[in-house]
Each structure stands twice: as structure tokens, then as C-alpha cells.
Image (cartoon, rainbow, N blue to C red; front, side, top):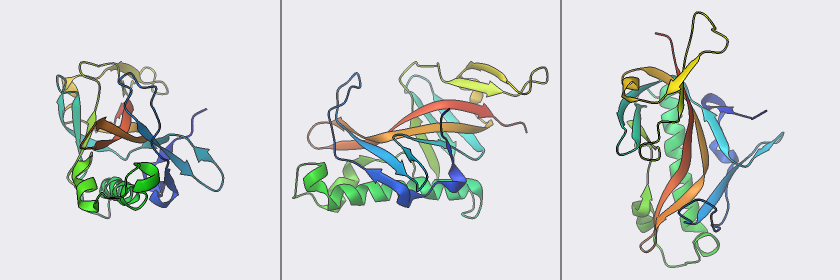
Length: 197
């Protein structure tokens, strides 16, 4: 059984960033793992189920899917967007404060680290990246015949404009290229659940 954190209960203060280590990922770039430390459990990867989000766009060739997160700050969508933005700020600050142990450097200014961090959320949109031409992310639709199971199909352009909940896995911070450093949250879009209108 996998443990998944609802976005409404996600606490950024419980997220821990470890130093970069060599990756087993196919491109071999280093990754700084993230973990979630709750008093009752510890998660190596952070898996979050979001509130219902509207799919703004999906560019299959670029492997980029965008969701609207610019709701009022007191709504579940707005709170989720704020939490992802706060997570990004925490990572930038951690990379700056602990750059000696995390990056092996001591001379980088916070502004430089921030400019090197490719944000996935800008407060208006959440931009997730899927391997190019990878349509294997399952999309689950409610089915009147089997509502307890749902119907699954592959992710396609017909998802644009739909309200969905997503299962998002965040594994760490990945280096995208060598020097100057380029970083991004290493994430995987695990599942998409279409919400009935």
C-alpha cells in the first residue's frame, strides 16, 4: 500500500532536502532527494493528491501539461498553488544556505541560485513535464457500469479544459545541465483522475 498526502494536509516544514547524489536515472544527472518526515511515518518520495484542477494546456510534443492554480488563496486550489510555490522557495533557500554540503560550492548568491531554478509553479499555473511522446500516464474516468474502478485510457489532448485531480510524485531536485547549474523539481505525473462536472 502506498502512502499519499492530500494537498490540503501537506506541510512544507516536514520536507527535507538531502545532498546531491549520482542518479540511476537514464540521463545520469545528479539528484538531491526529498523526503517527508512526519512524526508517524517517513516517505522517501512525496506523493501528493491535488484538489480538482483545470487542465489549461497539454503540448504532447514538448511533454508539458499545465494546470490553473490561480484561484483565491482561501480555496483548496489556491492553497495548493501557494504550497508548491513555498516548496520552491524552501528549496532555493536550502540550496543557498547549505550550498557547501549540497552543491559543493560556497560562493553562489541566492539570486543566482534562484535564476538557475526552473520553477514548476509561478502562482498562476502548475507546469509539469512528461517524457516527450509518453502518453502512458493513465487517465481515469468515472464509469456508470463500474464506478468503483473507473475507466482508464492514455493521456491525450482531449484532457484540456477538464477538471482533474492528479497524483503527483516529487522525488527531489534534479540538475538539468552542467555549468551554470540548472535545477528543477524532479517529478512524475502518476495518474490523472477526471472529476465529474
